[in-house]
Length: 260
Ligand code: BTN
Image 1 (cartoon, helix red, strand yellow):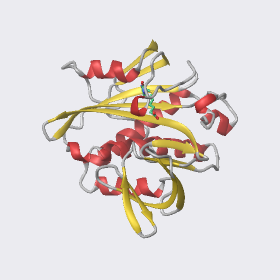
Image 2 (cartoon, rainbow, N blue to C red; image 1 turned 45 degrees about the vertical axis):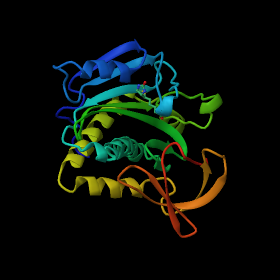
Image 3 (cartoon, rainbow, N blue to C red; image 1 turned 30 degrees about the horizontal axis):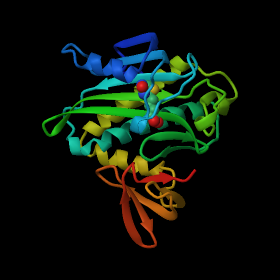
């Protein structure tokens, strides 16, 4: 990308030392009639950061990027909302790849279904998108993004996480990471809106998806059974399509885990 300036993402930027959750603040802000598309809410510390499926998002205060972007994709059908999830994951992927290229970091950056971003198979970013629906289309989307930037110690459940600083060996500029994500988020969002853009994003997403066209180990969530298969697609509903001995089965978020 040559030009990192944006037209609307980050033009309104509200920064706080502390918030319970930037997603909660963003949702309240988005309910106001004057809410601007692309407005960003950032907190240096979250006291009740939220993750996917009711989990909490742990992030060391002051060290990382925790922000939410307010979007208004009223042009996107609700049954195509997975397109937005892919566009956002790819925006973080693109921003990290841009950074890695400039820093000459030769480590693999990937997306883990549905929208985690990994460096060297370790999680560096989590995304929580919360949509409202208006008729057949989306209303407001609150796109919550947590990137591990300068945190260097991860313990307990997070022991397999990483950060940009751990990868580069030096402190990184959180503000710069944020601006880079703004630029790629706006570009991918506009691409999704354009004719044929969803197909381009889907192909780009599969190209960088952990386990795509590779034999991988999975855990079946209800019973803990381990099985092998090959990811062959992610369908329009966001389901993971896994080929198990020639039969393609579809899995939702609650029914499968990719074995680390
Ligand atoms: C996940 O991987 O479980 C998703 C984590 C999303 C975390 C971000 S941090 C900014 C925003 N505010 C929140 O409360 N959560 C998201």
